[in-house]
Length: 301
Image (cartoon, helix red, strand yellow):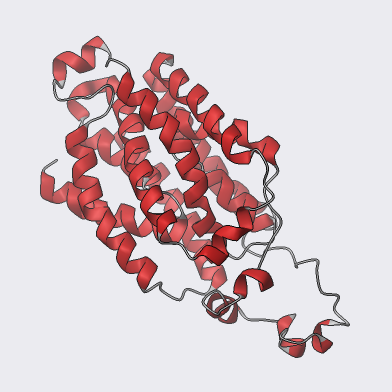
């Protein structure tokens, strides 16, 4: 896969970082598997390691340009971030010793099951009503928009995400800190950054899609940093080292650089001029992307 194609796909990883909080992991894993197909079964190890580095840079940049009032929703999560990092260390180490076929099929199975869960279990496509205002009092609270606040349309919800002070109106519950260790471990093991777990969890905790996907980036950063360090520090498997001498640890720096070259400008542009997507359409798009990625990995298998 040449540099131009990788950069073009990097544009897509930048868009998924902003729109879905993926940090590039779900796109990067199948792409790097394709790019490093000469590695055979070892390609999945290199893909998950390279994905961690791509996610680290994308998530760090996306977090840096996220509005402060959105990031305030992470207050009160306690040791969530350290536990995500600890779980990521465990998951990244486990990837080095797990059979490549297990990692590949775990990736496909997890993404497919997550898409089905989001479709079948309530709370994602139609998030639960926020508990703060009672139905009878919503029309009398200043700033609530009267009766319209209880029956806001999807388009209205998307627009509200850009108004000053909307962090208070749309604030959901924080994620429990106890979820940090398992989320970090699974995310680093599969190279997916954690957004496939954190976005649905925050959605069901009452966050609109715009906030849930934005908050996935700092959570991904906590996972990607230790995962990338573990991947860069280790030595590649013998089969991979002899076939692909340019590896740094388990990371393919050529593929990572090309993906980032495409992704970073897109992140800057979309954070500066975020598209207005109706909330429910945003949720459906998230499920659609999960389905496409699972199919891409199946086709490569």
